[in-house]
Length: 427
Image 1 (cartoon, rainbow, N blue to C red):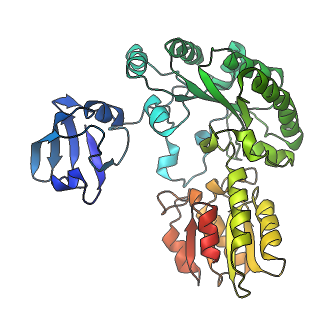
Image 2 (cartoon, rainbow, N blue to C red; image 1 turned 45 degrees about the vertical axis):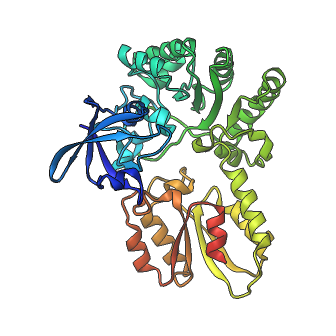
Image 3 (tube, one colour; image 1 turned 180 degrees about the vertical axis):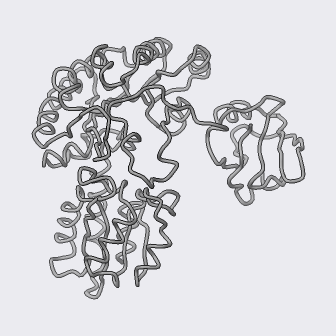
């Protein structure tokens, strides 16, 4: 199977050649393609031949171009075929805690090194074959994003609940010796891999001769849907303060020795601890922002600055929807910039779909949002939704469609992807 084309850019080389959405790139110079990595590798030549299968059959298209150009093709998926799934039974797996009705795309136990390289997905490396390892080494697929969680064998065994955990760490070391670099994450499960175990893991990763570029420390995510699963407890405020107290001197030491803080705590840990986020420079180049490490600092800085510059208009009103963790901070920004008399308000929605322990905006369920808007009695105000809560702008995580929410709200519903979008919607 080749790559199915989702979109062809107008005026691009592909458009001029008559390639259309829905067509399939099945081979290049007769070589079958397994993923976007293959496609990029074999098209980095001045001349090649595409095998394209469309509604009228398969045809061959000769290409002669500057390899720095872009054909103008966007594929439906960076992996052409099935995504490689996980072979572990991790004690904290979020997919295993899913309530009924979740979007199908969120129920895949993704552990595919190709998506780690192409999209920044975190993988365990426990399912790599010898040919996978050689491909990573030869094609220099770096950096990879790796879930480590612990480096002590007995602790890894408790977390991964699979004999494959040993393969993951040995693969990490082998690839590091081959010059591959990594961004790693540690999901902290209190009582299992925190405290001295957390310190040991960070130190072990720091000693891999520069192969590990950064380490993100994130709290375990738990829902009430854990029947038959390993008993775990969430990261409490006391736990979060202990983690920050442990990481702070480690950051200082690494900064003095290597010029980088190296290990960074997720925003959720600062929120749980009730501690202000560090300043912008403390996140350096934001190496793990897609992992929830440092998302809030630039967001709130941008929101505060742009709201203060926005021309005043007494008649403005809106409802900004968010999760319960960010709600108080957004309310604080609104009061400071728009004034306490402003008709623009924040609606922090309780997550009944996953449970109150899930507080982030990205996991808001559409039904919970609809119910919260109705209960608040503000259905006539324009509503601003967080884009991270929607898949391709259409479905909430509980498969509730955005179109249905729009039909219930008697005012415009705007999807905001960032702080600037929020300010534009208010203005």
